[in-house]
Image 1 (cartoon, rainbow, N blue to C red):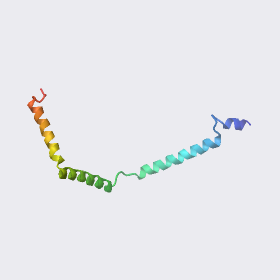
Image 2 (cartoon, helix red, strand yellow):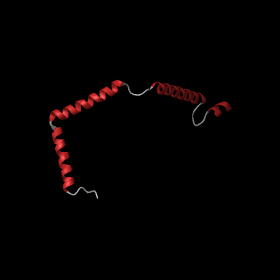
Image 3 (tube, rainbow, N blue to C red):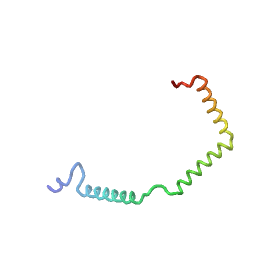
Image 4 (cartoon, rainbow, N blue to C red):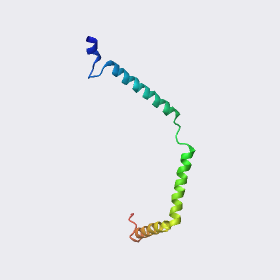
Amino acid sequence: MDSERIGKRGGWKVEQMQTAYAWLGARYSLTKERMKEDRGEGPISYIAVILLIAIIVAAFVGSGIGEQIVGYIKSAIDKVFKNGGGSG
């Protein structure tokens, strides 16, 4: 009877605590092993990102929107320098 009362803490039995402890220990060891094996991104990921950027740039150039963007930037620069620049 005393061992049953000692074994319970906050509604948990000793067996449940041992199971939870064992489960957490197993998860921790698996995480450590995964971290050792993780060496970063491979070359395939970098190539995929470069290809994606190249496709986006080609779409901008092919659609003519690049010329509009350049026009907006030039007009913004002209406005800044026509108004005195603001530095000084």
